[in-house]
Length: 371
Ligand code: ACO
Image (cartoon, helix red, strand yellow):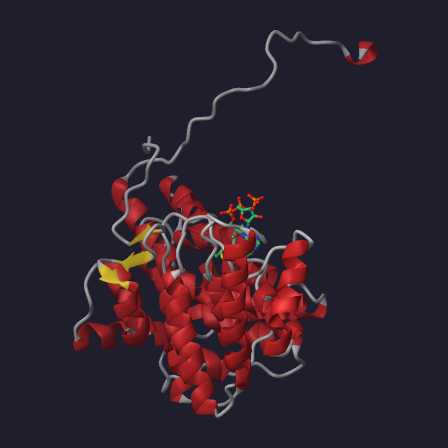
């Protein structure tokens, strides 16, 4: 049985000093340099790929991007019923077993992991198009993973700045310790189940509002404020009435979330390239006032900017609506989930936490007619 702690070489979070290490590298080095595929390789193999290894990984992913016909049918049906994007993703992801040869569905997790990483963007982009009454776009094998995702969503080859912004986002969310969805994936793998089951379970955990399922609230707040001159009165009112400022505070980080810093830079570069800094500048000014007021109203609580704040800005500026923020998170986090599945499998240990019994004792059976 697995001990109470689950050791990992994949990432280390130090909330006191605001440090996130991804497979030995500071997030700051990975976030702005690495491509999606390089980070994936690093998490899977514990080293950066050579040019040849990277090419090989890219080829395997490109080959697996198209969806089985049954997956497409399910997405069409889901769109007809206006199923939520995370539910549609979960339903479609479970059909990916259809892509695996019969003899590689269980012990060897690698083929399933490749299929999942390759297909999650196709599923999400296809569902986005279907919900918008647009024909799905076939994957473009000339484009790398991140650029292809944007291409399948919006039908245009994206600008390098937009690709870099999304790639930075994917890197920042690729792995983050033993969060709820990652733990779910590990528990499922620890029973010697398959990797598709593990990731489908992880998607279910990510959907909940306490994990990944309440995105965009920080952006709503910034948009409601609308103008920097309104920030102080709006935020004061919110705090006076006992409300929380969205995008601030974190259970683990007691200083500025390092992911917020990376995402803020990526958002700035993207907005500058677009020639429209209005929303970015507003967000920066609101952030400054919010941190100042949180210090005033909640002294000693150490409430700083968290990852949600600039995530929402980046995904919004890329053209996504709020309901697709969490599915896009899943497209990034699947690297970490699958890497944790490999790591867990190599431990050969069942995760089975102890559960102290706190229920009644000394009860005796009462027949139905006497209850
Ligand atoms: N705005 C105002 N006050 C806050 C905020 C905030 N954003 N966050 C915490 N506080 C206050 C609480 O009211 C509480 O004050 P009190 O002791 O006077 O009652 C104190 O700080 C501690 O609050 P907790 O909820 O115990 O802190 P915790 O560390 O458990 O909360 C959480 C973390 C849930 C993220 C919280 O900071 C919050 O609600 N933030 C706003 C929502 C948000 O941004 N969510 C996304 C988080 S990012 C992520 O999870 C990936």
